[in-house]
Length: 332
Ligand code: CP
Ligand code: NVA
Image (tube, rainbow, N blue to C red):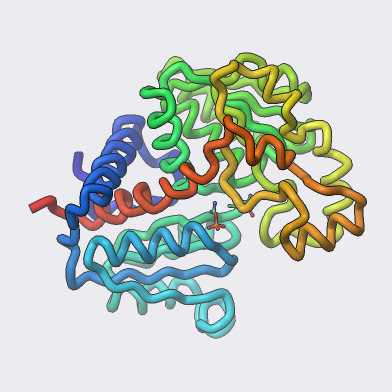
């Protein structure tokens, strides 16, 4: 499998074999890290990490993975570079690729990361856009495979805003990989019909399927994986909180809803999660709207079926695999 020089912008661009290769490479790199075997054959290379939105997992994963692979990395935060204000994406791309061997971008529209890739002659990795979150998907697939041994034929139910980055990307992942994807959400949060049509075609080839329903119970019936994400994503306006809470409350992942899935089902969440009042945002919104949790109850989040922290840890190994594969690392 040769992915050297490829961008990693959306899973739409990757075949099921390539996706599986990246996840298997990540599993191997994880095993080596745990055994204390260094894989630092990218010594002397450097990567740039552009974050126009905030991050804990994705930034730390890129930084730790870069260090582990022997690379240097430079973090450009949402405020302190020239990007977008005094310098266009096309100019930024042409500057950065004179200095760096790869560029990560987290920000707003997918067209921005596409533009960056167009003008860069080094690999560009999507660390989250409004539309897609492809590195998250590899960590999710690794977590699912670690849990169940295989992913094929498993049913993943996604509850909440099913037309944004995480929901879109899960639908692509599942349909490409021969899994059954179900989204439970009010109609106005259903994914773009054009993306559903593309995913229907992936499912036809892979043996997967898609169910999009307004009925949360129908979505989670017999599911192997229950997945949710925040109801208000980064960059969305403050005014929408009230409407989101009203619209999405019937889709909150509760113990009762988990009970409708398979007994062996696991709970996943890309994180960060609004499951208690221990953050400043949660406290503020909790007081404002009289709630103590949003997309998932604390009971489920902290419960025995939850694999959210294993999933978070897998971000690093899978991001390492993406950088290693696209930069053409060698194990020698
Ligand atoms: N899941 C995820 O992308 O987390 P961060 O926003 O912390 O990077
Ligand atoms: N939908 C979320 C994902 C966070 C990892 C957001 O865009 O904020």
